[in-house]
Length: 127
Image 1 (cartoon, one colour):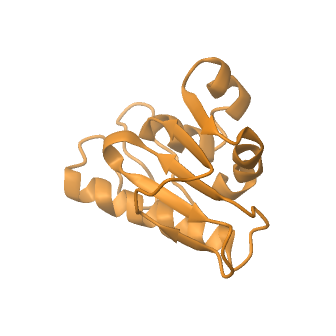
Image 2: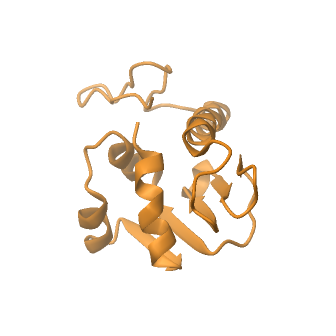
Image 3: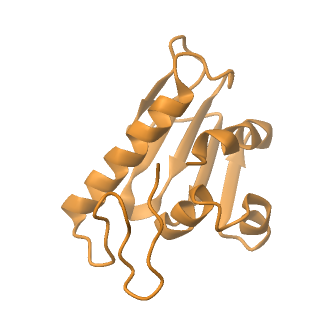
């Protein structure tokens, strides 16, 4: 599960994620999110293609839904679809605080490549 952020302090519950996170703790955050997505994807997500989440300076998450078993890594490889968004917007989306369609319409979420695959990804990102 992804934590909810305290709107006053910016601190997050659950993983010790805070607003003053260093690059090292950003990587811990990315690793925890990657592990969560790895568990949600499982051996066969049914995606049938590859997807890359580009979270800016926080890193990337690559989901290979074309291979069986499926794999989830932090590699920066070409993908059938690339979903780009800021870390904070990603966290809000995964916590249900940001609607994916609204994020797309507002330019907070950008998709390059196969949009249908990106739509199949949404349930895997929810906490």
